Length: 294
View 1 (cartoon, helix red, strand yellow):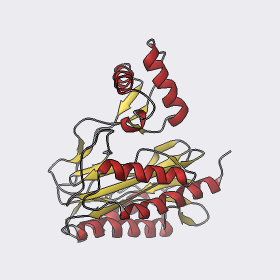
View 2 (cartoon, rainbow, N blue to C red; view 1 turned 30 degrees about the horizontal axis):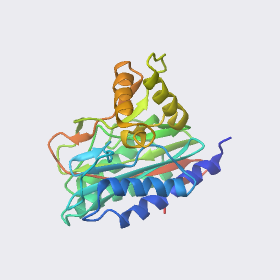
View 3 (tube, helix red, strand yellow; view 1 turned 30 degrees about the vertical axis):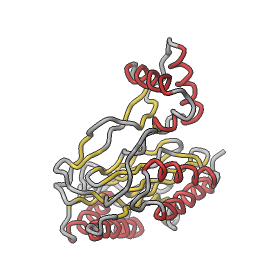
View 4 (cartoon, one colour; view 1 turned 180 degrees about the horizontal axis):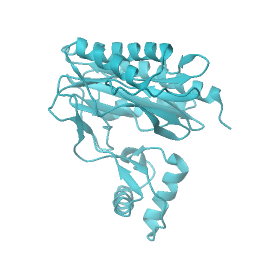
């Protein structure tokens, strides 16, 4: 049975792995090796994946990860590493950005300082509009734009994204985050206009409906997904560890066509602006706990 200690453990693992990952995000590293090392580290610390580690480059804000046959090698990219850990369904969600080009440190700093300002606002008054205003004001002060159609989010057991939505700009909302809420604050800063769209093929999936499946292969793959991931996102790369390539590809196609699985394409800044990300998971109890702080 889950407890507050499960949330704290998940957050602690996520924060440690986030910082540990810095050693591997460097020129010459294969993206698939970085992803596999991070995910193996989570499991070695008695955590499970809340979602596949997101490794997103440059104009891509989120929802990219290594594919099973990924040939990409890090060079001079702006790299977002988004780590999700769960312990008995209790989730720690955290992210950092690493600049391998030497050109975007201010962009990174703007998101990190916006995150700190937002946490300060939660401690003062957890009003959604004011949290968004603190994020927007800080990012604008650096000369960049917040990504307005991405947001932080509530977190519940086995649900990475839940209510409330935590804005990255001033929505004027007077709604307060309720006491007892677990949530992620997640500023994205960009050199572009501050809007993202889905683009390309999604290689991250999750179950969105429960239906009967006729063919044996898809039924077998779906049973595996339900057992191992429940409603949490998973990657094609992970599925290839348990099934033959033709089985996994066939089942993914069939399950998507039947509306059982949903894919998450990469989220790309519409004006090709570069994007930085910073994120912590918090608990609003009698005091504010930053669960993923390292």
